[in-house]
Structure formats: structure tokens, C-alpha cells
Length: 302
Length: 333
Image (cartoon, rainbow over all chains, first blue to last red; front, side, top):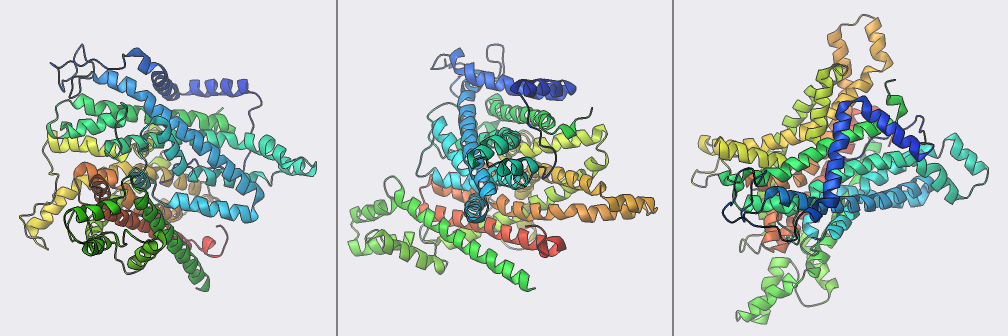
């Protein structure tokens, strides 16, 4: 299933004139539907948790050995794990890893995907077909099994390495969409005008093409972040990577290996990361809906 | 016809090249393993008092190449065996060839993927049409939201939630291997056992993937509804049921490509569901082989999964050109 946003092939690609314009539009669009506000709020809460979360708790979380796999209570809002650690604390301290890895992966995807897509779409000809062959290849190899196989050689368990490997295997879809957007943009009047005026290629690519492609890249990025989160959590859940730090995937894996799915004890331990993933997905879906309207003024209802 | 054959030949060549790249990749990967598993097995056999000659023969049987000699000759051996569908021997299940093991697992995965995909396709298409017809009201927007959400939920979340609530809390279904005490074959108890094991994985599959079909179908129906010929047939007073048939036929086109593509990807993507439900398919095999450091089995499973995706891609493209004349005549690429 593709994870890219469909690009409108033609249509007015309006460049936000100033940064303030973008933020003001975003605010206007968010206010129009309460669901979008909820989405933005969810994403904001997770990002904030990712930033400050680990500072709220000591490095070694306290263990309450009387309360093993306990249910929710006043002292442990989401229950405890198999060692008596508070699940909420685990969830909050584990958020940073998940978000850092996903954000780094997204950054790499954007760099490679945009560069390949722009170059292939603008130059066409031989560079285009070579780059698109490579892209096809990256798209065809099933990504998650590839990560599993790679994990045997490279224990990418630190957040940055995780992001690197996710990004390196996940840029194919973005490169394709950027290329097709570039192909249609380069025939448009303003690009032709710039070419006719003898502007250097560097100017055309960075000043004429890039600002028009940026909105699509941004939206793909946001959706990409969620898929990167699934993949990394999935890798830890399957237990193919060493646990060097606490994160959501490790929580799921340890909950399953400690029999939560068999006995049902300590359900909070298993459900907390799962529900967090669902919430974050919901937030992103709602926020993308808002961004879609900011970038495609034709969708606006007024 | 000629164009079709040319297209097919091009696809096949590209597919073969891709499979070659993948095999080369796994070959190099196994050689790069920390504590080279090939060398390790060889030395272990030597330590057990096996003669160097025999140890080498044993290792060759397992991995398809000898530990000594240059990488080039090892690589040649490996590819030669591969051409004969010899993927080596499994390390964990002693003496069983990887080809047999992988094909045995493939049978289970294909059954699961077919059942799950058909189920999600039907649900997705029906709900997608409804969402498109009622797109102005609440029903439409709720269906779209459900679609985007379910499309976004990773399969392991769905699988774990279902496992926990249905097998543990409610004890409705059984997980674990199909009961070995029942005679395998085409008889009632055995089939019943298979079905009771496969229902939940297939349901998890369908639940986590129908969202994608729903969204695609919805946008496809909406775009067809905006076409001039629909307006024209409405103006000419053609019955709504017949208009619906026009719409359905045109709107389904893009869905078939998605269907063929996802069949391939699901074979690789069933990893989580198979793992969560303890289902003996290829994805579970891939994970187990990594856990057991059984690298010949791992290479075999990965190769088959990739092969399935490549085949599905080819099938999707050919299918699309067969059902949509515009593609066949070189309109769009």
C-alpha cells in the first residue's frame, strides 16, 4: 500500500508568499473543523512529550516490587510492568526515542527523495531512467522483511541509526511523487519564462521548482513519520534488535514475552504503547486533512 | 498481442535482474555476519571430530557453498545451486531442505493472504461506494475517517488487540499450530481445525487493510461521478441502477491494480499477523530463522517473499493493461 499523497497533476500550485501567510492560513483552516484542532493538539502533545519526557523522570525508573503487572491505580495511572515500573513513566520516557528515530528517518527520506525526484524530473533522459530504475528497485523490495534481514548484520538500535536505516530504505515513494510533480511543473509558464530569461539551473530548481514541491513533500513527510513509527516499533516487537533503550516497541515486546496476551494480567502495559500509536495516527490523519486544505486552496469551502 | 509480449518480456527480464540482485545481497550479507556463520559451523564440526573433508561437505550442503576458496567461487556455487532451486539445508530442522520448508510455509501464507485480501477488498469496495454516495453527510465523513484510521493502524496493533481480547479474554478461538493429532488431509476435523486457526488472522488482516480499498474506491467513485457521461445518462433518463453499473465498472479499474500489488506486499507484510497468531507462514519463518541464526532458511524465505512481490507487480501491470485499453495503447505509462 503506498504511503504517498497523490499529487494533483495540474492546477494552481500557489506558493505561500511569506511564512506568516502559511501560519495564518493554517490557523484559519484548523479553526474551521474542531476535529483538526484535536489532531493538531494530539500531535503537539506527543512532540512536547518527546522533548521534555525524559527530563521528568530519573534515569533509572523506580521499581515497585509489590506491584507487578498491576492494573491501573491512583499511584500508577496505567498500571505497572513485570518489574513493577510505572507504565506511564515508561511510555513518556520512551516517546523521545520513537519520535527522534521517525523524524531522522523522515529527514533522510526528504533529502534523498526530493533530490532524486527533482533531478530526474528536471533533467529527464538518461539520468531520469537510471534514477527511476533505482527507485523502482527500492520500492519493489519489501521494506519490512528487508529491515528484518538487515538487522542480522547491523544492530541499528540507537535512535539515529534506526532513523538512518528506515530513511535509506523508505525514500522510494517520495522520489516518485516529486519526479512526477517536477515533470508537470517544468512545462509550466513560469519555469519556461525563467529558462527563457537564461536563469541558471540552480536558480530554477531551488527558486522556481522547490517552493512549489515543498507542500507535497511536507505532507508526505507527515504521513511518512507514522509509517516509520510503525516499522521501528514493529522491529522491536518482533525482538530482532537488542534493547538498548526504553521505547514503545520494547514495551510491546516485553509485554508479550511476559505473557500479557496469554493471561491478560498487566493489560495496561501492553495497551499503553498500542493506544499511543493509535492516538498519534489519529492526530496525524486529522492534521494532514488541515494541511491539505492549506496547500490546495481549491479545496477550501469558502 | 506483440506489444503485450514485449511488455511481458521486459517485465520478466527486470524481474530476473531484481531476483539476482536480491540473492547477491543475501549472499554478501551472510558473509558479513558477525562471527561468520559458515565458518562457525565449519569449525564446530571440526571441533566435534569430523574430518575436514566431511565438514566441508556438510557446510556445502547447508549453505550451498564451501567456506574455503575465494568469494567468487563460493558465489558461483551459490548461484549454480540456486538455478536448480536448491536453497541449501535448514540448520534448525536438521536435514530438511530449505526449499521444502519455505514452500511448506508459503502454502499457509498464501491461503491467509488470499482469504484476508478478498475479504478486505469486498468490504472496502462496498463501504467505499457508500462513502462516495453519501460524501456530503455524516455517514460519508465517518466512513472516510474510519478508512484513514484503519489504513494507518499497523497490523500488529490490530493483531495484538484481537489476540488479547478474543482468544484470552473470551476464549473464542485457538492460536498455536494446527493440532498435530488430527490426520492431515481433506477431512472434517482437520479442515475445521485449520479454519478455526485461520479465521482470526484473516479477520485481523481484513480489518487492517480494508481502509486502503475504502479510500481508493471512494475517490475513484467520486471522480467517475463527476464525468460528463454520467451527467449525460442522467439527463437521458437512464435508470439509476444502470448508471450505478456504469460507475462501478469505471471506478473499479484502479482498484484491481491496488489489489494485485497488495497481494504481493501482503505476503511479505503478513509477518506481524503470523507472528502474533503463531501462524506457520513465511513471515513467521523469516523471524524464527533470524532468531535461530538459521541463515540459509532466512535467505530462502526472503527470496521467496521478494519473488512474490515482483510477480505481483508484473501481474498488476499486465492486468491493468488488459482491462484498460488506454494503457494498452500507450496512452499513459
